Image (cartoon, rainbow, N blue to C red; front, side, top):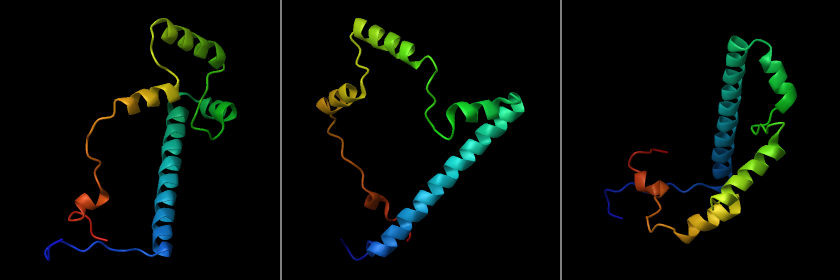
Length: 116
């Protein structure tokens, strides 16, 4: 590190917890805004659908089809027939097997752009 490079700021555990809490609250607010936007578009384009959606899926972000078991069976059969990986653990194992040698970027690579 030379004299012209800014010194990295060191946070206490309490400061770090505060930053993490702030980021978490920000993400929750963003998710709520996205949901409210989605609901407003449902109301606008499909009157009455918002309440049906809430009854069917609640606050979850995963919306399984009522026909999920049959559809997953079709997916499994077609993937097996064409030798395509579809189970998450198999896909990630495959990805890690052929890992690229790219360098992981660091938050501190951009410290000239960020002032804390």
